[in-house]
Length: 309
Image (cartoon, rainbow, N blue to C red; front, side, top):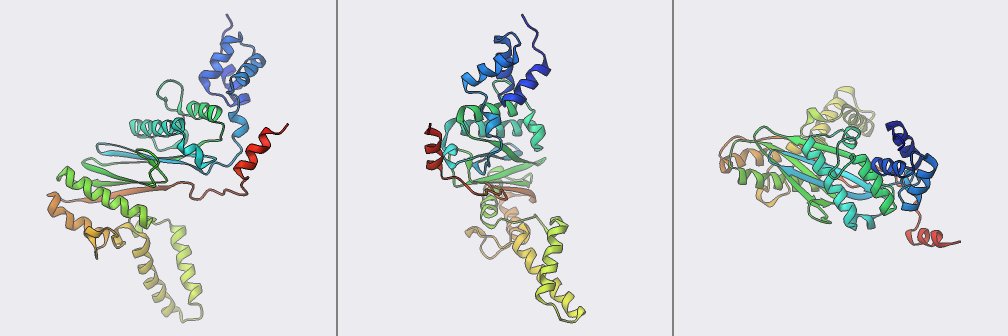
């Protein structure tokens, strides 16, 4: 019986895009003959992944997973919205979120190398799904929030299935107070984040490049004014900007907190919760944001072109 080395498996994966376990199995069945293994994988329909990898994946699902004081949000992309309705793809996305929750891993490349339930790695599971479903898929990003005491509030918008949708939000609240009341506040803030799309928790956390761009816009809009006047205009303009994009400064859009900022709503809630509450962070993923889709081929036309010849 031929010895199947890790190098042989790696080489076959690179040539076919199939999963690690599939490659190892094919090599075992063919006695280590790489070319025969390639043919075997092709016959099984498992060598499609590499051919799909260049195609834009901007659809898919955002998944939320929360347990106790830790929560995660992940985005897994596919080429078409149709695949988001596929049970296998939903199971894949949900399982990846579970792996991220279990490991506390937010680095995508490291997450891909973690063990996937049922065998192999997360990367293997994605490659296998590409082969069976027939679309390119990518694990695009992940975020993890954890508090020592309290809860991670969460909300999914445009729900496709339990814990899966188009927008996913997690919010970290630290407190030793009433768990149920804290969870209610967490969900309310998560719903606000989904709608208001803040860019940072507070002003000090805004990316300096974004801040400088905003300052330049204010300066250009008021060009020609005396320097001392211009700086006051910029200062005033930034205060307005912070109220628009910083979560703690934003006016809450939840009816229970009408007329209050998120910071004020959190402070006010301490009476009901029975202990101090600190909003420690949030993560908001909107499906496909920032992805350049480019020119898309009509899906019906693509299917028709595949049936020709």
